[in-house]
Length: 416
Figure 1 (cartoon, rainbow, N blue to C red):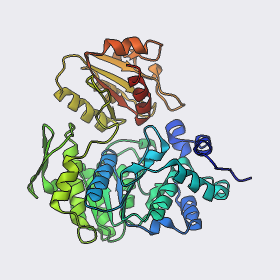
Figure 2: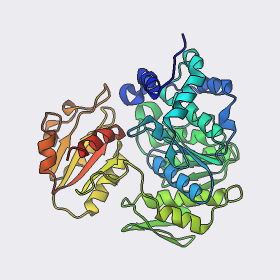
Figure 3: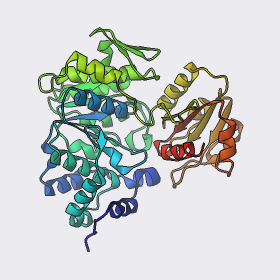
Figure 4: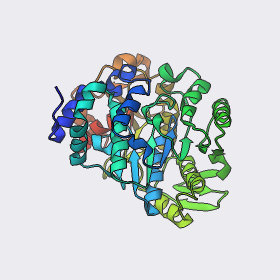
């Protein structure tokens, strides 16, 4: 019996019935491209109908995707953007010209494929990928920016033949799936490199770079390094020394100098197909408002920020940035998954004036049981939320950890 989709609530009901990585972890993933390829074939292979840039990496890939989308949109191209996870609404994953797709378009897609859903039983992420590719074909976009979900080689997005690949960074994350060392993780990410398709890499450790370079060499794919641009960061200013570009940005995290460098390099790699003037690039970056959930000031008047940081490299970057901000009372509030939390991550929090932990929902969520007692973290789950938040009004607060924590913190802000 096919599913019936007449309203966005029907779509939400169906999506909520699918196992999600946020809740079930690896059990919700499918590490084979067959089902997604077969489903796309039924729809006429929409992923082959538009040019794309494919972006993988441990950290930074979401920001690079948003920067690329803004740059090409400013240059006059009709853009599509696919990222994950969403922070508040499922439609955020699919953007046309920078705006999330409408509920009507999502309902129309589900109505169109309702019989196929029972036949193929795609995972949540596979289905998201198919939606993105179908919408981008329907909208006749000029260029799509596609973020991988997990890894690269067996990621559902890796059915693409893009114009350009980017690997933003390699560090330890999802080691149960991608491998225990940087070389193994790099091998999975490098799986997006296609024959003769140029690839850009960010600030990559030597062991990981060697693996990526080997894959690029085998694929005869030209390899470009962001470090060739000599990116630097100082008080919101980003300088790309080699093309001699100075940018006044809204960024406060140093790592964004690398993200901007990769964005510029992309425009140079694709300049014959998609011309972007130097001024278009400068305007796009200087007017870029930031990415929601990436060191976003989440309260309009308090010095309260949210920065999704779910692995050691990301947490270090977030906390190093907090140290540069002025306030003697710095407080951290974390919400993380059980498979992400570690003593190394908890050690990064020791210099904070106060430290709180929030238990998220789902089987994967970490709780106070997963935090050794000597870390002296306080639970924020015990009905004391309003009191704690009111006590923190004069503190600089960083809410961090899983991106799944974002919607909860956002709701808290509406109470204060």
